[in-house]
Length: 119
Image 1 (tube, helix red, strand yellow):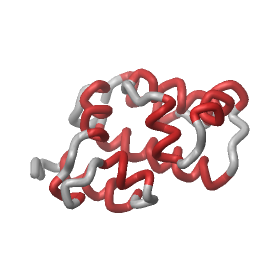
Image 2: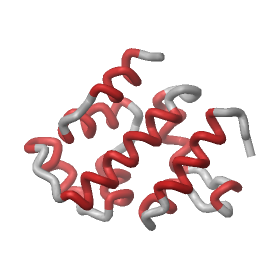
Image 3: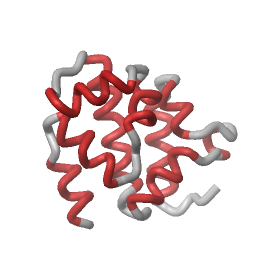
Image 4: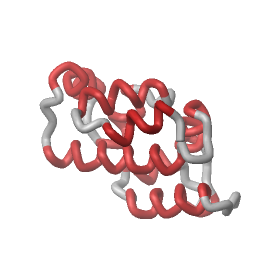
């Protein structure tokens, strides 16, 4: 397990999670799209960690998916996986599925990828 992955696993504060996401090339824009918040909100979360529960739940869901993917992908590869069409998601990009609230489907797809299903 990489040091970056280990730090993400241990991260509790929202500001730390967002800061670590940048190492995975996950931008504020991507976080905003996935959570349904504005980029301005994401920047504020990074500064203050003050976040509404609905957004925090989605952010922590993304964290879980990133942790799964980082078992087999480089940090840059995690971002690329999130933005690439995926047959297991009916050719939808994981980032789009996440923005629609389909966290469990994307997590299952990430776990399948980690376990060797390169569909």
